Structure formats: structure tokens, C-alpha cells
Length: 363
Image (cartoon, rainbow, N blue to C red; front, side, top):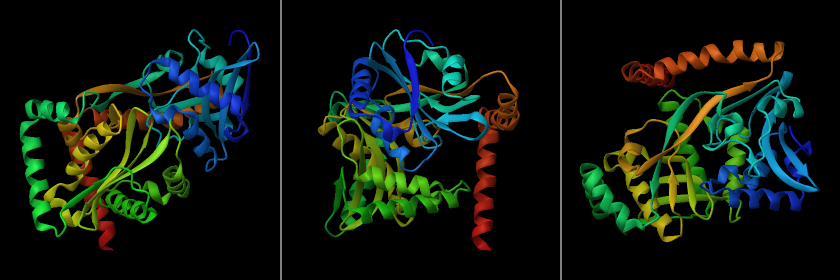
């Protein structure tokens, strides 16, 4: 582990000095200020996940590194907020390079699993089993420059979406209205209901059926700090919400998280209209980058200006518990990767999941 000492604490046991040091290390890193890597996200997860922990490095009486994680049975570790956190890893002083297995030993972990490891994480990068694109929208030059780029890169997409926006506005009494940062809890409940229905409709597990996730989202919606604030963006037709998105923002990055829309308005592609207005509103509010998150989707390909890279995998320490983790996790991960890397097979799998979801709904 190198010089210094490491102590593992619950997030709520972090002192003001440690939290400020965490923020300062993030600000000095030069990496995009993704809010998932800020201390506020870990603090919020700590209120809903009792197994949340943070390993803190101390050197010469100063905190110089932070590693948030969740500790499960038999020493099984996961990234903090695993399953919903879109950027993961350690926050370290430049030059601090603990060995991955030594880090696990200090945390009493047999394994540490990640599925959205951020770029620039040399401690864990060698343990990655796969890498994935996370599309981004760069609005650093302003929305007008971004829309001009879309006219070149995705002309049909932009032309069609803007035409649908005008058509929806004409048929709506009062026209369309966009709110970048909606504080009404009722609008958040509407989004969560839409998203739950979308998960069921497409045969995917409903994340909001998990109490810790729905509670976390509600609490983050109320949370306001410069490094990590919940942002609910809503597109209204008159007074009726037709599309919404909940994500996290820092001063310069909006991390896109939970988008959905009212299926009744699907012919107008309200989700696409919403994303254009989010880009416009974000740029006006000083945000430079919208991170659309890992995952293939046609709308991301149309909207993006570039890509970041995230990784999945697991660090393991030799031993029976690590072997048990490998046997329990790796075959399924490889099967998913096999399907994901074959577009035709992946499309068939999505069709089967959707059909199965419809059958369940008919019973």
C-alpha cells in the first residue's frame, strides 16, 4: 500500500476535513467532474445501503485518497451504488498508486466488482474484462454550435425531431414548455412511474421496485451542492408532462441517468425533444458535457459528439472466496458479453424479453 495508513469507515463517519480533501482531489485531477465520483453521491448511498464503506488514505496527517465501495457477505465487494452508479473508482492524490490486491486486503475484501470504471483508474484498469463506450454531448461551445454540428452529423435526426417538436407544440394548448431543474416531487413520481412501466414493458428488471434505489433518487432530487445535485428536467405540453429525465450534475457535467416519456405521445418522440432541450438548457447553465451513459441506443448515436470509455470487471485476491465469486459471476458475464457482441443475437434477445414481458402482463 505504500507509506501512510488506511482506515475504512462508513460514509457518514467522514469528517468535514476529509470531504473537503475529496472534493479538492477531484478538482485537481483534470478529469471530467462526473458527479458520481463526488463525495456527496457516496454520502447519499450510505443512507440507503448499510454496507457502504470508504477507505481513506492518510499521509503526514492529511487525507490523500478515497475508495468508496460496498461490502457484502464473504468479503464480496462492489462499487458504491453498484447497478446505478455510472462512474466508479478511487479518488487519489497524483502519484498515489496502491496495489489493487493490497487495497482489497486493507478493506478485508476478497473481490471488488465494477461495471462502470471511469477512465484514468490505473489501480484497477488491468482487472477490466471489457470496455464500453459512454456517449457524450459536448456543449462547451454553446448550444448553437452543437446544433450546427448535428446538422452535419445527424441531419435527418435533427430535422425530424424539430419537425415533431413544432407539430406537438401546435396541437397543444399553451404550447411546449421545458424546465431544466424541476423541483416538484410530483413530477419525479410521474417519471418513476413511466420508467417502471418501461422496464416492465421491455422485460427488464424494474429498478424502482428496489426500495433503496427509489429512496436514493428521491433524496438526491432534494440534494443541492456544487459537485453533486439531483436535476429533474421536464418537457411539458401545456401543463401536462410528456417526457422527463432525472440525472446528477456538477458545475460542468450532467450525468444522464433515468429518462422516460408518456407512451401516449410516442409518435412525437418527446424523449428526443427533451434531450435537445436538455442540451440547450445545460449549455445556458454552464454545463459543458452531458454524459449519456454506457449502453447502445440509436438516440445516443444521433445525439453524441464523442465518447468516453468505461470498463467492467473484478479485482480478486487468491483464495476460496474469490474462486466462489468467479464461479458465481464470470460464466454469466461471459454469456452476456457473447450476446452483446453479436448485434443480431442481441436484437433477438431483446425481442424475446419484450414478448415475455407482454405475456406476463396479459396474465
